[in-house]
Length: 220
Image 1 (spheres, one colour):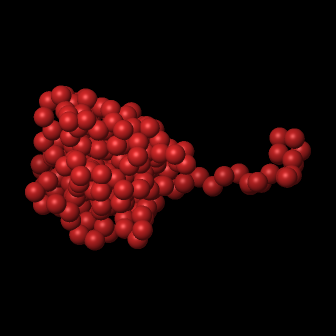
Image 2: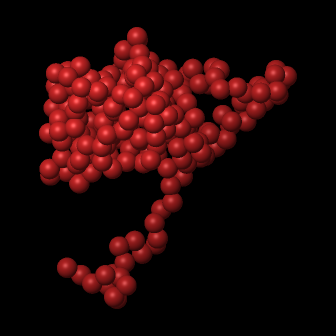
Image 3: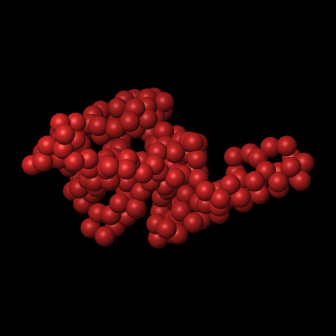
């Protein structure tokens, strides 16, 4: 093994790291077109929906093979909406991942439910799995939130089978797994409903902050 650069070895990136380019001329033109339209209409406000949001949600659904989506202001609120769509009763338990952003668990308490952490599955650094989830299921459990951390998918087949056995909702937290595949299936398309973060640091960004809720279940 060669010496580290700090000890005189060769630099891995001699020209420095390439900064990620989030916005270009296309994004600038799209934003300016929106400002022009709002200014010309005299409405004075852009609101939280409109033709751009509808087109965005439609394209997102097409990218995931159909379904229903709604853009929101953050990944945290995407989880809030996703969990809320399952209509949890106050005091219900919701199983959450062992390692995630605080926003991956806060929506549980915001809906007056109790977060219960499932440990990481043996052999996995971050992700939980069916064996660990099974240990914390109780008669009060309403749903399981599973996060595909760092683009690594969880064992969805095992988790879905376990959830079906106990009549639990499965909510996929896809904040770190845009277009991740599990046995050929895209993350977010396997559970009952999914939440994505689209903040500036994500693989798919909608700006400074953002999120989107996605499901193939029209009832949800």
